[in-house]
Image 1 (cartoon, rainbow, N blue to C red):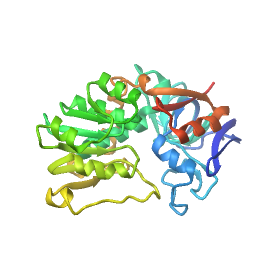
Image 2: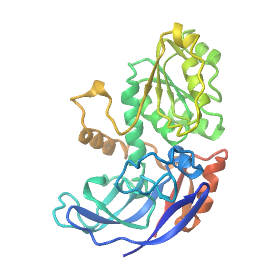
Image 3: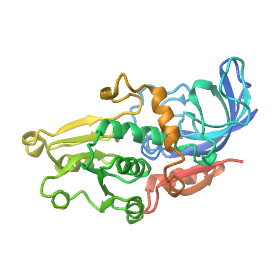
Image 4: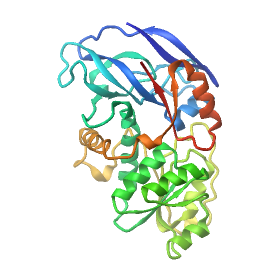
Length: 331
């Protein structure tokens, strides 16, 4: 079956290539896409060529390499149109989310496909991957009821983290220079700041600083701001992937004397404190329960057709005010 797919062929160079989606073999399904989402932080690095070209790909659905060309992406939703032998739990017509690059029709192993809740608009199913990331970040942060969490960056993942943290009873300070993003965070129930000013955060927290800071802006300079924003014995969760961008830190002051902890959060792993109570199946089930409850449609700020891929990534590159989530729409 013919299919169109987005490839990044060189830094800041995107093309749409005609491919084929073969009939599904045993254990596979074929899916017709409805919508896919650009993962702004990661795909911006890919688009700019800011990832180590020798780094191996971490999903079987990705093609090429970080040395270019590369077919990248992992937040797509569609409907099953063919089911291979030995596949249980998926039927033709099911709305699904998949870990697959931007492509109009694709065939992939069934275990990389998640059936979406019936009460969710399938066009929002691509948020599955980002909600899974946001849930993992919240598990790594593990705020106690009544604690204050500063979230540096209110892109789509940051706004999802803000929504989830507010559901836990945490007090959230959402930080982003973009007034539109701050407006959304306020609408969700957060306190907002344009910049991670330690003095302002100390004032908002009764002179102590935030209990936890989550760095999800993708900006290397924000990590120092997150360290400076937390209280003594505070926790900094680094959810950004900086790629090859260098990070310079000053660790001789508050970090050292304040016994600040810094922790990486990566969606490929579960928070060790949750084991063995949590496994990947439980996390998936929780994400599916959360998807219809979260305010997702408000996060899609720009929509493109697949043929406009070059324009979409050029917009991502400059990241103008008001940009939150770019979505591709398919026939």
